Length: 146
Image (cartoon, rainbow, N blue to C red):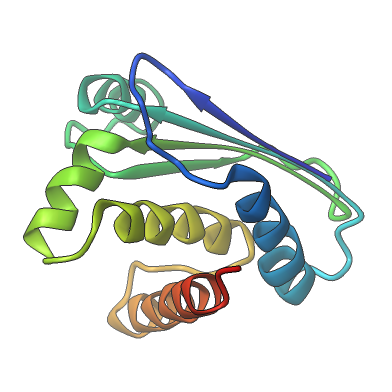
């Protein structure tokens, strides 16, 4: 079970990566996808321009976004994905929502994995469930810091 973090021309300022990897595996995947026995998740941190290009090329959207998740899984028991996160958007969202960069970064990291676990956010009801899942993850992660 592997989680990778890459920085594409940016510094994500992501702390305690080993603890975060364990949390993602043990608290999210184990809870929502118990049948998964193998996991390869790659988080790619980038800037707005990089993520906009991906949005245009692959999703045909001409808008900025904070995250794009690609589920590459071919088998139910092997979770494979690439998750692209704009640290530019994260910094702006943190300021707009009056939260820390670190907390907003983790919210979006959890958001991407929750999508892979079946959470959706297109309807109001689904978005509320997603926000609840994000908040639960944030509380568990930050309230249990060693």
